[in-house]
Every structure is written in C-alpha cells, then in structure tokens.
Length: 308
Image (cartoon, one colour):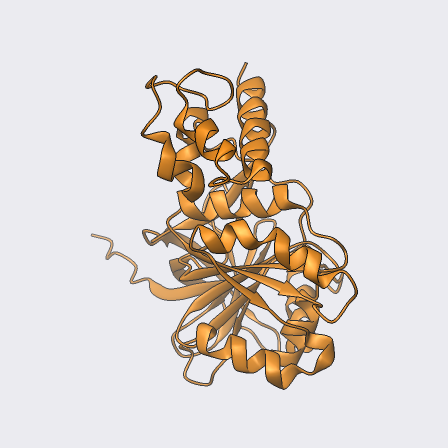
C-alpha cells in the first residue's frame, strides 16, 4: 500500500502566470507550480507543497503546490471579462494616492468597496501634500474621514523619517497591501522601507521569467527580521470592476449610504430617484456628499448594465 506523501507548508510571496515563489518556514524559497491546469494561487496564500527538484549553484529548487489552505480573505476586482486577485490573508489595505497626479475618487471608492466586501480594514494615504493644490485634494477626502476612514497626509519628498513615524506603527505586526495608481509614490515608499527591494524584484523576475524583468507581479516583502510585519506591493491599476458584488448590496459596502439606506420608503430602493428615499434626503441635508451619491449611481448603472 502506497504511503501518503507528507506535504511541506509555505507562503506564496510572488507569482507570474503558473509560476510561484513559495517561502518555507525555514525561510528558504523555491519555484512552485500548481497541480493541474488551473492556477488559483495568489500572493499571501498559505499552501502545502512537495518538492520535485533541489536547487544547485544558486538556483531555486522546484515544487508542486498540492493544496491551498483556507483563506481569511481575498482582495480582488472583477469586470465582465476577467477577475484580478491582488492578495490573500491581509490584515489591512493602504489605498495610496497623491496630490499629483490628481486621484480619481471613483477609483478610491471602488477600492474601499472591494475592501469592505472582503472585510479588510482600509486606510487612505494622500502623498505629496507639499505640492500646490494639496488643500483642495485634502478637502476631497473630508467625506471619507466623516464616515470613519483614517486619512493620512504626508510627503515622502520632504523626508522619509517623518512619514515613517506616521506609517510604521500602523504597519507593525500586520500584512499590509499597498494599492494605488502609478505615479503616486508607492515605489518610493517600498524602496525607502526596503533598500534591497529592487534586488529582490530582480531575483524573483529572473527566477519566474528566465531573466525577463516584469513589473506586473504582486510582491510580498518582510519588514522585520522576525517576519511579523509584511508589505505587499501590487502594480498600479486603472480600471477596478466590482462585478463580484450584487447591485442591491452596493450600499451595504458604502458606510455613508449604509447609515441611511434602512430608512427608505421602499425595500428595493435604488437611491436614485424614488420618493421617500432616505439617502437622497441625506444628500440634500449635506450628510452624504453629492460626489459619493453620484459614484453610487454610476456603479449601480455599470453593474446592472454588464449583467444583461
């Protein structure tokens, strides 16, 4: 009778296509491929794997991922064509924007809705507040402060020590995904916190792509020698679909609308034009910002349209 193979445990710290870098509890890393044709792993997954070859001459060994442990959560976006997973088993999300380029409030709202639906705590960071126009961009975030989100305002360009004093206590002991568009300063943050980050990216890119550098992979970095704090960097995004959410459930993931939606006259109120809508009344009283109400309407229309 064949004895069952004893599987090793590991953490997925990077991936590209069907190739993943898995880190063992002994802090060794190897290239792993999922069993079968389907590639379902994401960075942050805890997996069980078995070795198929040992590395030599500095090359990484290889293994096969046999099992993905149950996830605490998964942050992803989904449009009508495809699903894009960012990372799993997160403690928090930093939604990272800047004064310049001017951030899209729709992108911000979508990221926060995705985090709410996955039950992941989120903090908003506005970088480059030393630039002209910062006051206007800070004011745009006032509704988010009012609904309970923490908003951090900083400038990496004015000195990293001050920014680190704000960020470090919020990163300690947590797995944190940094998510935001290109040009907002995420790379500056990563390189300041982790001076060897570029080298790590290069090594992993070489391992996964036979020497072809890639900037399209999500990457897990340990922030401390004890491996208790981690920063996960994800490529900049433009679109952010929310097709994983049912249209009727959308207000449940928007705290400002959620606070009023239960008071609507009709149980199936869309909060767009119905009489007796408590959300519209709150907009008229200034308790829900007009921009947030507009974003809800745009998202509702998008979700409804793409389901037909």
